[in-house]
Length: 469
Image 1 (cartoon, helix red, strand yellow):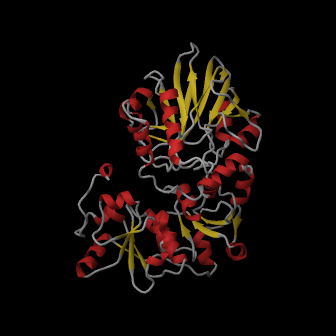
Image 2 (image 1 turned 45 degrees about the horizontal axis):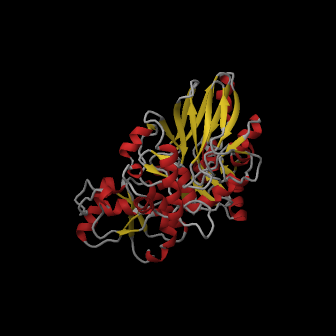
Image 3 (image 1 turned 60 degrees about the vertical axis):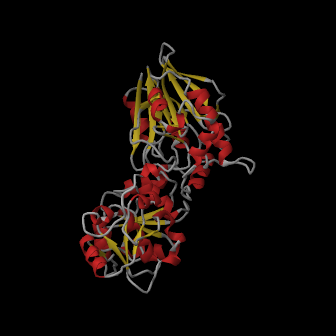
């Protein structure tokens, strides 16, 4: 028996490949499925089943394409209602894979179809659980994402999750390995560990939501407290996961087409496409196609695309470095953005050589900001998360989290300079590009973000431990 966790940092997501004898299964595959097929073929294995823990909201699974390419059936737990052929398993149903078995443990609460898969070794002993978004390391799945009827609240779902955890997971032996669906950085929970593999015993000892003396009322209150609004693209991803989607091969063929500067400009004008620049921060600062949105591949790319663009049907044109178009289109497809029309052939250099206008983002160093603060009052916007701002911030700065930027444009002046920062400079440049595309030409990016600001004499608030907030 072999268990392989395939972890994708951009999404903070874990997919799983399990093989025994000449058979294999995949749990919660990513959109691009060829790596799973290659693994199986390299080892002479046949992919027998594709297990889905639930209808994912934060990414588009590769289940449909993988089933089409391998013939393996898609398996969901009880209550699932996909629009494509799938095996809807009953609670306790057992699937044989070589000499080992995988048992269905229906664990509703995050969503009503949420299911944990229990892997037993050839002796029938519980070996590992694949918990999806039911149980994370340090946290549990948020109960406010499910598509639910008007008569079911997030508190109702949290109560159901409490029962699932205590009846199906906490009763397992302490040594059983826990393989979660996500780790730190995912929006599917609020307190996840950066570790990606744990054990039932560890979680019973350290996970706030698994305290032995916890009442259901306490669980509901703590699990639902402090939840930030989910990204707006989440329901659109659920829809794709339930109803199906275009082949990844077709998406890549279209999205990786090279367009000349003239063709690129014409496509932008004719389709209303978002021009998405995925290059490094410094390159975008220096020169970019006017009205471009910056979201760099070297950060939390896909989640921020989903948060800032939202509509997965929005046409997109890419500006990227040579050799990165395939990666960009693949990562966009993971969150359902399949309408990439092509990329600028030759990049920004070709655009400039064609004599076309370029724009740039004005920036200052943290030291320059400190000098300006000392000389007089300046307007500073902090686009970090509310918890980051509450923990420590520049005195007199205003908090506008990047995820909420589009709802707070009226608070940002167009008649005076203002300065934008985040923690390290990635999110503030996203904000700056979005604002400039909306006609704000007076925004100035603070290079290095709060990390650099703290190294200067700019006054900041006293630090407060985030866990006490």
